[in-house]
Amino acid sequence: MGTVVLKLGNDISTDHIYPGRFMATVLPSETPQFCFADMTEFNARLRNKAVPPGSVIVAGQNFGCGSSREQAASTLKGHDLIVVAPGFARIFLQNAINLGLRTVICPEIEASEGDELEIGADSVTNVTSGKRFASQPLPKARQAIVDAGGLIPYARKLVVEQAS
Image (cartoon, rainbow, N blue to C red; front, side, top):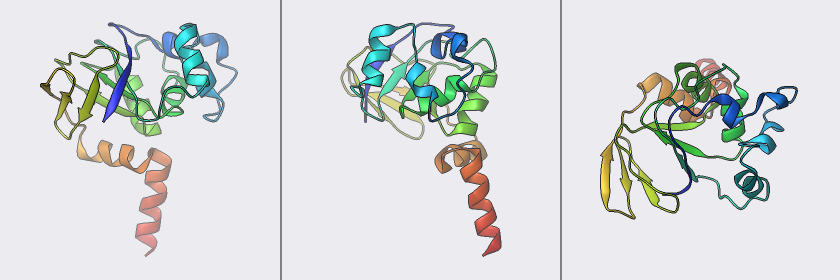
């Protein structure tokens, strides 16, 4: 179960998530400090560790649109956030899978900041409102990559399994 810590609208671009002026910083260990840098209050909460791991961002349609910068996914992954939205930009979604960021496609999601969400395999339940919303699971191969923590850990796992 996770608490909604940020509610966003449609068309949140990678520049909102990870502003371009920080593109010189690309290491996943360093990118989290710039997560939503222009939303100074939320960024400060993240940097001060006031947002617990497993917290949820609820967004609108087309989350992660704009450039193909993978730092937008790594900055969210660095805070162990979960993003629930009706839809994601194609390149952002693939970057999120490759990096092991949990994303949930939930076309009818209704939630506000402070709501508690329970994320299941094929639905999201807003425990606060008592409403349940169908979600669209990732294909099994893509979910296996997320579950492994990203593409690199997934590949390592396969190599080890094949060597056994």
